[in-house]
Image (cartoon, rainbow, N blue to C red; front, side):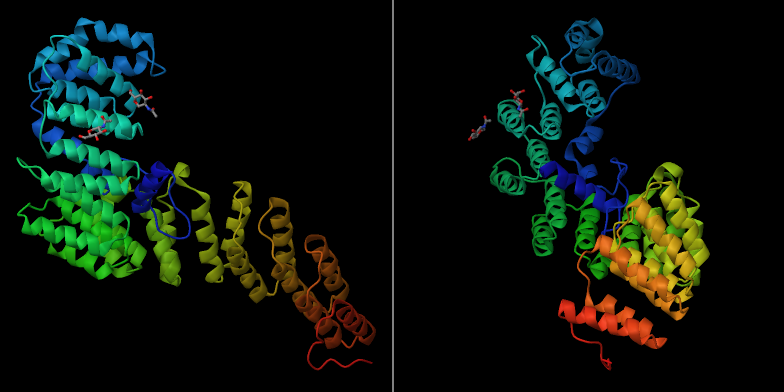
Length: 483
Ligand SMILES: *[C@@H]1O[C@H](CO)[C@@H](O)[C@H](O)[C@H]1NC(C)=O
Ligand SMILES: *[C@@H]1O[C@H](CO)[C@@H](O)[C@H](O)[C@H]1NC(C)=O
């Protein structure tokens, strides 16, 4: 559950908020993703002074570890770690950085990485673990969803290592696993530490946490606390604030933060672009897109769909043209049902019947299921406007076969169109068809039937319908006369 929630947080940044999450495969390393505020990786980078030689040794060892153990408990791993190569990693430097690099290369397999950490911890005559190494392990335990291990490592680390980095790691682990209260209470514990207190990263974690939970007041109070404690803001601080405002749909505040940045970095611009897409501020969106086009295409591709959705909400000729330009950029493997349905809706709303039908046909081929009645009604509205009952008929048949969401209005519309053409038998057949889906007849359908007959003066059938209405206990249509 907790992990799911966190995943949702990641997805949120990469997709429009409603009604579905757009991209099921976001790049998890996205830089406007709060996880990139991960204190571990940031600190690791700053403390890394690795030499080139150790770099390649570490990389090749990581590769061997990853390929040797198909499962995390392989005996291969033990023998691999006995090798000189592995041991040499620890001898290469005293500041722990080669080992940190090794852990970071293994972090996609946290259980495996934790085993390697265990090996290092239990190795006799190896240098004592430093704070950064513990912090890495705590973060890995968080990723592996083993919070009791994370807490254990945190407790253990306090005997040899110190600093906010350990707290930050555990806070992140809590946050990653949805343990909001524990993360916050750990922050307060950190504030009570005598020799050191929270640093920029600690505050950033708290900001992202409140931002994610749309607790703007708390977020702002954390910021005030940060400023009054003299803790400098970082790029991530601003990003987290913007993210919090984005979550709470406070576009003005989000924009104000953005405008206050002298030289916003690319990921901040991408985040602002995301904000503009959700807010539907097309002009600003377009200007921002011009600035970061390359990055959008290369790394934040989900923004392409977000922009399509933004245009689709506004509609109009120029939106359709821009949507068509953007759709060309979407790769086949990025294509997904929701986008297809958005496009169908756009064409339906713009009255472009041929284009809409082409997409409907395509949806069928791709086995896309339209399960939203709202979408079905939007499509239907266009058929109704066009008055082409044959095309409507074949659409309904297609929808029936494909198992799309059917609604009575589909058949009622067809009845009305038939009655306009004087095809009263066809009209009556639709009622039978509806009976097979909805066993209980309703007044509205019978009223359409009545109107159809009365408009062409078919008294006998008209009276039959009125009889039916009697039978079901419905009111008569207004102006109905019983003969
Ligand atoms: C967490 O890690 C500890 C130590 O490695 C292990 O004993 C425990 O079974 C793990 N718990 C879970 C839920 O995986
Ligand atoms: C960690 O230490 C705290 C107190 O310092 C203690 O309450 C807690 O039980 C310890 N947790 C583990 C898993 O050792």
